[in-house]
Image (tube, helix red, strand yellow):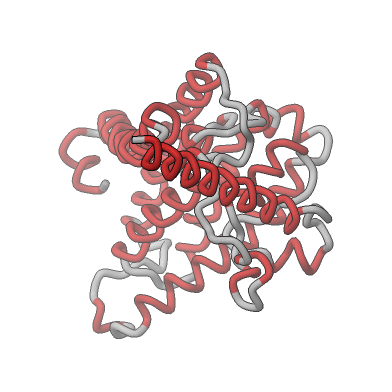
Length: 276
């Protein structure tokens, strides 16, 4: 970013960064949307959480708001670059300062910090007047697609990204960690809003995996609005009692429906073979 600023100026650097952010999003969300909502192979279609599909108008609205979010995220990238230039951040480039072991550890810490921040920020956004002013835009996608991952009101986009520069002021991080986290966070959000449950049956009742959130978890949040506030993990929802009571049953119902669909297709294939 600093190179872009020095070579082209602030506004061109901002536009270039926003373009790169949206292109990255376009590739990830676009691929899953094309696979899940256009090709819809039988093996994947059975994993659809809500049986219905959103209208084209809803999808274009998600894309439009996502483009606005890319502009906001790029602006914060510009701010972070300027803070780093003037020595206000803990970002470093010399790996020997903290060693290679700090790279995955700092990634994990950023991961946990973001998860905690998101849960409490998300709960705040569901309180009046914040929901009506900001968060209502995201909840227009009551049956979300991969394009909903960045579909925010500009003010919510500010809150969504603000934790990154704040953390960078205090936590030593290599630029590579920030880049890796940006990709991981986007992938997780796109899958979480994808509308399909990819985890296997029994996942939400496993003693370890139950602490990881699923697409069903977030899809229920979009459908019912309140509850299921977590992002990566299910720690805070379980501790604070904000999981929907029927979350685990809904997850298993989706997987049972997928299993029944698979069995039905298998029976049809066997009948076809016998009649051939």
